[in-house]
Amino acid sequence: MNNKKLVFSGVQPTGNLHLGNYLGALKNFVSLQKEMDCIYCVVDLHALTVFQKPNDLQNNVLETVASFVATGLDPNKSIIFNQSAVSGHAELAWIFNCVSRVGWLNRMTQFKDKAGSDKEKASVGLYIYPNLMAADILLYKATHVPVGADQKQHLELSRDIAQKFNNDFNCKNFFPLPEPLISKNISRVMSLRDATKKMSKSEESDYSRINLKDSADEINKKIKKAKSDSSSIPDNLKNLEKKPEAYNLINIYSEISKKNLDKVLKEMSGKEYSFLKNKLAEILIDEIIPVGKEIKKLLSDKPYLVQILKKGTEKANIIAEENLKNIREKVGLI
Ligand code: AQP
Image (cartoon, rainbow, N blue to C red; front, top):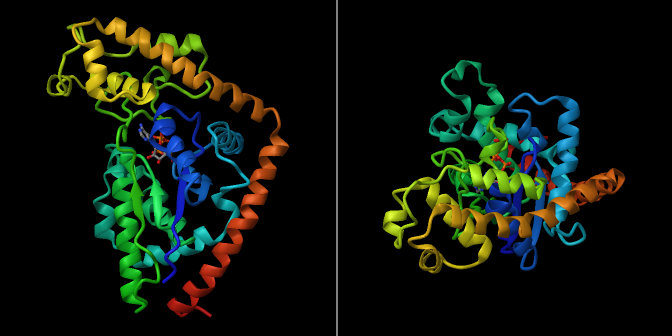
């Protein structure tokens, strides 16, 4: 077996990227680029699982590429492309639809969350989305997948599919079992309005998230309005954990300021939440505003972004076609 480490991850072009995508995924992508070969994909086929207006989808694909580059991904080092441009993703997803089991998909909590109370009305695509995600990763035989904690279950399913394929077609170690790379400090950034839910692009209220393109004024307002607590900041983690909204804000502060939680609690204990919010807004503005400016600058040169996708697609296709040739052979397709 080829033991070379290869990173693959994807981001859906479903709207403005936010602080959750930034801390849970993009920052990780950038640091991995220094150590390993990386493939980063704008997963437009995944976006279709929930209806997208065609024009919005096109703009969001380019905006996602701009966000990748603005946060530090280098298109000359990493392969950056959009999923639909490499048809192998859809082909392998079909093969995996036939390997994966209904019982496995029935356990996926994200489908339950996204489909809501009326599952009958959800698209079939939304239900089988994790099989396509397995195809995205395994088409390149990727070994490591940086994701937020919300994707851990889907990644476990990718491992199950890889394992079953290797067993069914009697080809031990053909597909690697991909490992999740989940940020240790902040794996899940929660909504600023309801800390039981993750920060998300599709959440109705814009006040629930900090978008990478927000102005300093918007960041200030959103942090000031973020749900917190009327008592003062506790001096220990155990008490903080009982207050999920406050915990989320402190966690974000800790991650951006690069101070561990104990240190932050020492600095903040006994103070009002307004003190934390002022400090948090300040460091978020310092961190996010330059990224937002760069995204806007890149978006003013769409041909450059299209060119990044074109070059990335060419590179991705070469690896995909080579692997697909072997996959078709294993399965018995002529
Ligand atoms: N709140 C979050 N905290 C930490 N990581 C997160 N990610 C997403 N939200 C958070 C990580 O970002 C990467 C890209 O995610 P995605 O955009 O492809 O899909 P998603 O997880 O479904 O993100 P959203 O914002 O919730 O999008 P919508 O609303 O369109 O479904 C992934 O690695 C994810 O873990």
